[in-house]
Length: 273
Ligand SMILES: [Zn+2]
Ligand SMILES: [Zn+2]
Image (cartoon, rainbow, N blue to C red; front, side):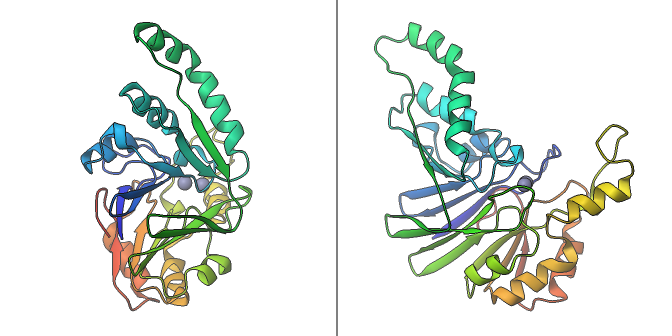
């Protein structure tokens, strides 16, 4: 089983890191976790042409994880893929996809008017709960709740297949439930959204930079905690992702190594982990 980091960034645009997205695959079976900004181009870079763009598993509905769902949906349809676009995600996913189809309706009709015989794109949504959600092509996928309140529910995913296991954390503060579901995982892909690197502008919704950092740090995992999570999960390897533009990989590696003795990879886009 392979995990390919398509996007290791976070909400702020970063020319070096696309938005959150990870491709997990075993043989021909593929699972895309999240659809952050730029995911379509990254899939092509990884050798997956739009006709073959896979099912998508959404961890939560923050826009940095879903912003390019529309691009995936419409592009695979434009090139000729008529199989339904499968989307798995938390409660609310069906409504979001209906709104997305509504947003794209004009474009779809204009394009269909040019085509000789084409039905509109279809979307197949499965709203998930904690537990085993999917077993296909030798891969078992489980969803588990993480702590990203006020975003509820928010999930992480565990993949098992080909004698290997991978966990994708989604966005979460250090979570006991994630640690339970990640026990002895071969590869733990975990967020580290370093809020000390955030920017502040008047009008952003917080009166001071310090308050913004404190509020946002309370629902993400900070560098000081990331190694503790990996050690408690007894993970075979820690892969750090969801980074801020100002984060320094060497500093994150050092912070993680303070509590975790295993190998630490600070992810870069298109790294295979
Ligand atoms: Zn989030
Ligand atoms: Zn995020």
